[in-house]
Length: 279
Image (cartoon, rainbow, N blue to C red; front, side):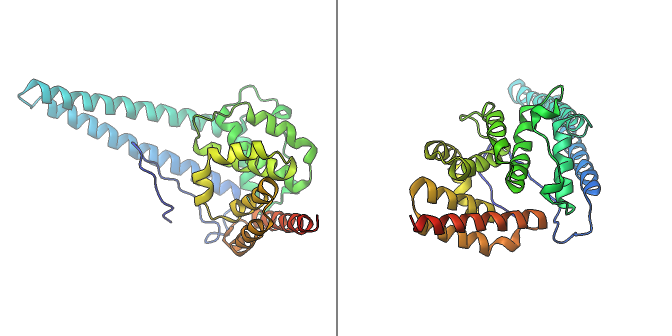
């Protein structure tokens, strides 16, 4: 399914298992398929890069003029460095993520359980501090935060939210927003628009990812924008419009547990809108 693109110097493709078309797959199978996919794509990329590098270097020795020969040779050399560097990065990342004593592995197991139909209430997730892991990468913290935050929200553990928010806010960089940051910012917008209404904070995070937010039509984004419009701008009409769009798109959420979570969040939004109108 094509989701669009941005003009960049490089590109990346994101793949995922379609849960709706493969309802029989369990969490362990998903993790194994994800590992196999990463290894296969890394191997293919490495073979392609080595082939291009070898071709350029060999070709450079057949070119008579020094300048074009050096350009071709250096191109092959840099492709080789990039290929080897990428392979090392992928292997080190996989070793970290799939090891049993890492936050990435803990997060992936939680996601696999959710996909398998285990409700949030039975996950018993711990904070990063409680897990007491030896070393945690910033990317792992960012990937874990949305899962843990939604777990707290679904279970009503609102008193544990400030610690989770403070933990992830300390590693955010406004000047460099990555893919992993988007999920973090979305939940922070929700937090500062509903659980801890702070319009200035919600607006700051919203504008850091404004292009991603306003292009996204998923129910969770519509619902978060609804809270944002209601409590940061006092616009119940716009909030109701976004709530209706979120409800209309609810069936597109393929994971039943997440669909039910979104349904409850939309109900909270509608209740907030009704109470806002009576103030």
